[in-house]
Amino acid sequence: MDKTYEEDKVINGINFNYAEIEEVGVGNIYEEKLYTYSGKKDFCFGIRLFLHSHRFEFYDPEEVKRFDRKSILDIFKKMLTTFSPLSDNEIACGSNPQRGTD
Image (cartoon, rainbow, N blue to C red; front, side, top):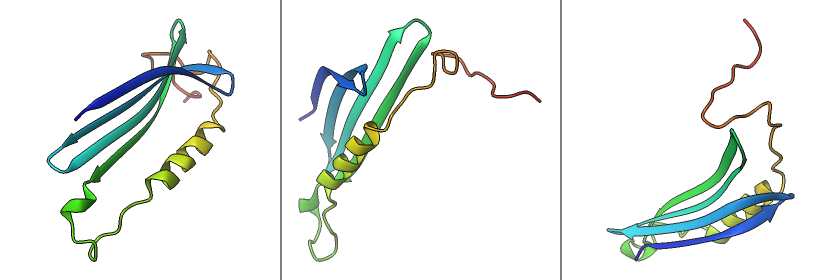
């Protein structure tokens, strides 16, 4: 069954739209955690965690090891607490600003 969940979250004083998306099919599991910001004109960004795994039950437990999902999510959460966006002048939605001069 596919699931989607959305809410607003604040990280380091920045208001994000947060979404969790989970899709499954033929033994595959696709899980996304997506934080998006578009609070100002011409200024947006997103932070995304994408996990692709397989149903552990489909494999011989002596041949594969279950990954530690909680540890991966904990690391991602720690990374989020260090996030600080560039200034409005350094990043713009839909543009590819050149850095420096030739």
